Image 1: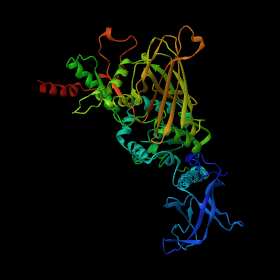
Image 2: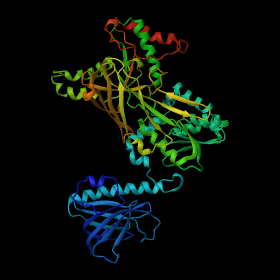
Image 3: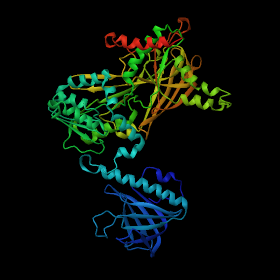
Image 4: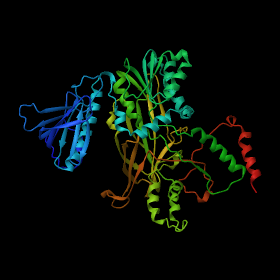
Length: 591
């Protein structure tokens, strides 16, 4: 397929075809010496040429052919996995690649050509195409090897930016955060019950634990009688998992910890069971919230605070929610394709994202009021008002993560199913979910609330792990997308729209939400849209919000508003003396 180099740069970054050709102004051979790294151009071999990228037998390569050579003797084959491009000028590039002319065990770039382009634009597009085909060569080679042996650069490295991956594995490599997840007893207890209630699925079977973390799920599988468990963990937590498993020798003798990514490691056998917790991360202060909620409520009660609203607002840099954040589901699907036997089972096997419109005037005002800072006209002599509009919109790009009362929902929820046993990895790159609701009450719709659940489809017992509002609170809480322009609806009115999630290289998603209220009353049968509101949010940068119940006079509360969900702790779990003592010290300091 001939591709004109005068086309736009998009031609080089589109999906790579099976073959792609480029016309070159000239091609000059380079002569090299084994004792020197310098290259000498052979002027006699300079002539117009054609460069062809192709993928033959699953291997991507670059071939240079001079137009003056009709017998094929002037063809230069380049292995893209080792080749490098070096720019000598705006229109001149050197391509060097490995060769076997030198008697040395060391890898050397012993051959090369100088490529002369007709203009700078052609040079730039060629370089873009070179990188695209080089990536294709790396991935294709890895996929063609048996049972998952990959090249030095895995699929994970290719789609995730290094800074995000470094922070991700650093986060999970700390015992503090593993403890936070283990102390989510709804999460951990549900996994334990799902495994132990389905011993028949695990007994005498080979199990692979994807993203094993501390190794707790591997130990559960061993307790259920697994023949052998392979615990795959890429972070430094693999060392702690090894230590924990060694401390349980009766179980540990059937567990092997493998440090590496599921995209890269090899296993000696296929798995009968794949188990994982791929639904995003625990926030780092989960137990802290439990204590702070109680402590601050005691503080308010002790000093008889009567402010119109008493709330604790905390910001957390990194949070996992909405099922797909962190993009670990893709690794879970890759592990399925690489390791799971055709008749094997996945724990969990199905996930559902639930969605419903909500009305929460206090939340809307809270988010909107964050931008009031930028309405100051004399901030140390500076007028900040020119940035107020941008700041206002910016706060509405943050998804809100908290636990809310389900009575704030204004319509029955709908859900979108992700079948982990059948879906492709590419299906998770972009999710499009059409929305359609019927309002139960007349109110203002402030946005869309989301939560998820997953199914452990065992042979004996089917068990769901849910993060729904009103259910026991988990470290995932729920997520709400708040519209900067609310919608007004009447009871029975139809609300339509869409939710689109687009994956990005920072291991998260960009959320595109649109909600519309259809025409109501006379003429409604003719269709039409009365009002529409949209927002774009970054799932990677949420606003983590924990609120205590509001203490507003009853006559000032909207009819649909109810107190937010409390986290209940038994009194026996706390030492009142430890909690009250700081308050007594503070009282002594007050005037």
